[in-house]
Image (cartoon, rainbow, N blue to C red; front, side, top):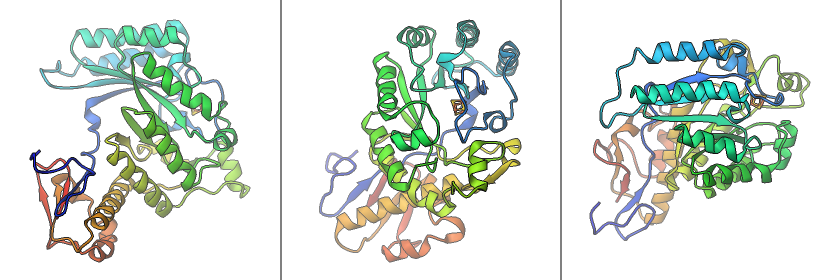
Length: 356
Ligand code: SF4
């Protein structure tokens, strides 16, 4: 960065820089091992993990791990500077039987020794953290623990039958970090009791805890869940796609500003899951729409700080694919800012936006 330019966020008379995040996470660098419902202490009202992962029940963990090893051993060993990550998703990893966890960690160590992976993470609940287990994860090469926090709001947590309250959620985050592990936080915008205001307060709380990454999973209504019954009875209404894009756009803007990456903006497509969805904000390009909204909101703020009509906006090249939203739906709002194809340029080497 030029010594004459301020860091992102600081204004100067003629030029403002702001963060735009980075290209979304590359899925081919992750080796997911799904352990649906394993270690799960109950059924949250919205959860249909067996369908979401398409993996059925996970009684035979050894078979799941054997399959994961067979698939991973086909991959070339990682070369210097390359990264590949093993990820235990879907279960409450710290609450599964010790013998099962030991099998998972054996796989992790073996893949690390063979240099097929360089990193590892797991997901769990904030109320299922014991220091000795966190230490076991650390010693066996887990780098990051993602907590399914969903919300820090007591009412939303109670309505969704999560089984803990906001204070426990926050304490869980601190425990992970105190154990020397990186922290990931998953949030569930639109869950029962979650309004846009509640969710944005959740995002601010999460960012205040300095996580390594966030994930947002807009709440959907799969058939066969308590939420589906509530939806049919008119007791629960999911967020619209528009509401989701607006609210998560603002949340993503906040995360960019705090330089915390958001590695998921919607539930991954899964035919078995999609076929049983009754309602909820499902759109094939939801992530791109949210990024487009976040970029526009960031630009609006920068133009306000500039205090005069902008001359030019330079964006990292990857923004080109989503800049104007679905079918150009954001063009009018960009135009109102005094920005459009004539004065927005893309720079492959830029890591942030520059407005002048
Ligand atoms: S979301 Fe709730 S019900 Fe589903 S696996 Fe996690 S703890 Fe269990």
